[in-house]
Length: 185
Image (cartoon, rainbow, N blue to C red; front, top):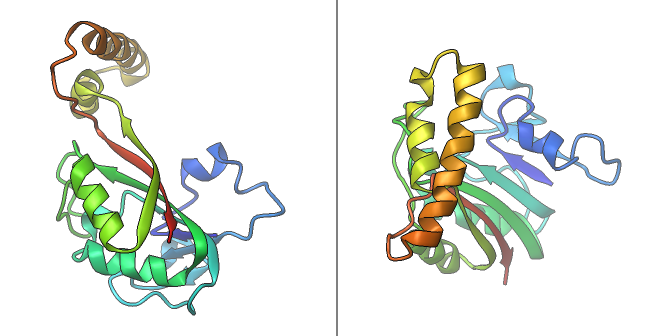
């Protein structure tokens, strides 16, 4: 399993049980040595792996900072085995993040087009949050003390998102981003 742009011990590894699973060989890839990845590599270039080497690739919140998302996805497709799985998260509502760059935000249709155009079949495309949780996400840094107000406000925003879906069905969604599971074809 390749974890692209892995940073240092991301939370999703713990949540998915990847760190403690003896059946998973997890290879972290990042350009920052200080994060102690398994492989130090510049992901804006070709991936330093042979063709069809991985069963799964994780790309969490990196597609938006890659200057050529199509190029990245073609490289991921190349290193995945036939039937391999890509787990991808991509932001839609997100503050400007100049680390190291910030190029894109992705709508559902843009992600569908991008993934299908690079040889992936989307099995799941899940919106994350909606307009109220997006507002909380953007305003969260101003809520103090965050340990108290953050929990109360996010709970309220989740209830408001649910009510909005129920009573204002014509309003278009406004998710924070998307979680996608796609397979190679």
